[in-house]
Length: 332
Image 1 (cartoon, rainbow, N blue to C red):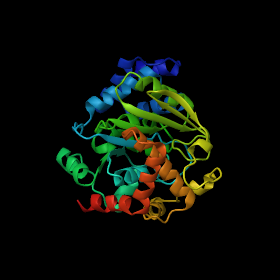
Image 2 (cartoon, rainbow, N blue to C red):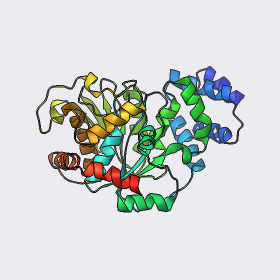
Image 3 (cartoon, one colour):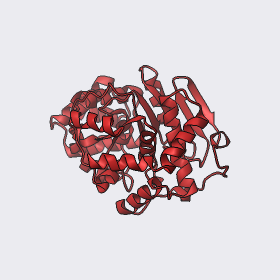
């Protein structure tokens, strides 16, 4: 481990195997807290290379609790976090809207480290019981259409890292890895990234897989589609630039003010915002943003038009079906 640190301090990069070995040694208790903080700090000063990400990811997946949910044609809607924007929980809301249309969602997430409330904070606050039991998760997908995978109970090494992440209070390499570690291995993924360099790195990595994916980045730094700027969109079909005008569906609006997307000051406030939007009482800006993210997810899952998928998402929200999905999930 000292040799790896020495090389990193000399601004060298790790091979895939060296990156993999780091997490394996960490899981064995062979990396102390100071060394872990040092490595996390180094990757805050630069992004990991493609080979480093592949090595980190391979180790984490090999060390994870195994489940098999591949019988479902499901999607995960997730962002890297770490964009420092403190938005309300857009991706998690989009997941319930998508499930409300009848599609399957395998959502992977955790508690917040560099923001106010992660998806796990919201769902735990609402009374959801985290589980890594495969049969329970399959039951949720069968009966409700959505299940939630709380990262720390699937990736034991995260228990070691979570305290360090919280103490640092800033984005780390673990924000980068999180979206790649869904143990349910959904066949589809809408992945939001907070900067173009990382978006390109993910794109290069996914090109060598069979994943049905879309990587999105709002050009003003959000890891979601926020309608505050144009977006870059990476998929198996290539790279595309969407202007805000191209994303306008339904009610015509001007560019959304970022202040309209702000989250609360604590988890309780964010839960209130979450339930307000899910209950159909969100502002026009809040609704449009969750609906556009849900629409992009639906376009990955079916061959329908963008406009039709937007209408499906809107019906899911406005009819109360998305909220009903949450009620059913919490009742199981």
